[in-house]
Amino acid sequence: MTLQAMRAGDQASVDAGYDSLRAATDAYTSFSLFGVTLMVAGDPDADQALIEEALGEYDRLLVDFGELQYNDDALSRERGSRLGDWASAPFNMPGTQALMGDMAARAGDSDRAKRHWYTALRGNEAYRWAFRDEVQARLDMGPEAVAEAIAAGELQPFGARFEGALGTSESFVDPRFEGRIGNGSCTICHTRLGAFDDPSGDSSSVEVGFIRGTMLLPEGVPNPMPNVFALPGQDSTPKAFQISRIEWDQDISSEPLPAPEPGSEVEYMIATPPGLQFVAGKISVDQRDDYKAYTARPIGPPRYIEVRAGEIADITDSEPMVFEPVE
Image (cartoon, rainbow, N blue to C red):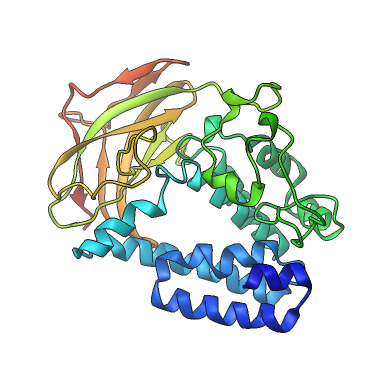
């Protein structure tokens, strides 16, 4: 309803649509990103207050997502994995972060915009995401220049690639992939096509290796979705990270599998640039870290792993990372 009203220039119906989306968010907070936040991203008439509301709704989603890990009902266990990358949204993480970076730039929050864009280039399988070049261009431009270009109609924002959206006067189809990628607003997250599938060769990828290991989940978290980071050493800025999503076979299934059992040992895989790194994990709610883990070593600092381009550094034969409560 809101999309149709936006396309028709019917502001009263757009406002009514937002009210319905807010009500839906209150009833199902973990889906707020796909309501108010996503709609504002493409709204050509969104003012500062509406953009800041959308940013706040995303923050509320993250809190709800964290708390969801402690809910043990069937619906919560099914919902959790849909908030990361999964079969129907293989690039949910980089696409979401790119979209949020654009909105933060429009709101004048430069530091937040850069954090979102940085994350979009390093989270999960972003190394082969088809839109990474656009994100890198934004980092090179800087948030202020991005906001000015969007306002002037010179730059098409993420989440605004449908007819009637900000900076999009007619139906948009990505010119790459022989037209198979469709409407960029949806497919920045939902396409299965990546940089390696572009016959034109215009989509860049990043040279990475992989760390494959295991982690022992804590007993006290019934619906765990830990973050796992590849860290180079003293610098606390991660080179890459993985939200440990539920495993799925995208060739045969569009549904996520149930959350792993508390106390079980599960595998993780991180795509990261080459170099000497260790792995750290955490289970958290917003800014509160409840559990932390590090690549196992009997004594001393965490174990470092040499990552080589195009290779898997497999440490699954070693002891798993163990999540310990944060005192």
